[in-house]
Image: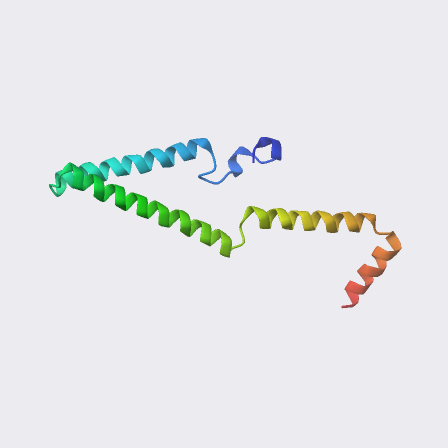
Length: 115
């Protein structure tokens, strides 16, 4: 999505721009280095042990977060296919309404008002 799609620059949520991705990546990398050196200085762990602990923690944590976000999007039906299908169905219904004769449209509207 971009300016060509009619979206204003301020409408993009955090995490969807290149700058946001760079900030997230830098933050995760910085947190990894901080944890690595923190384990060595605060707990006196050897470099190998600290590296293994940080790597295992970050890989496991990021994998769980990634899979969790996917499962959440599936349950909320926030998937690209679902959005495209909904847009298509709305476009088909709009086209049918536009092609419907005025008399038939008035009859349908009066039927809806009666119910």
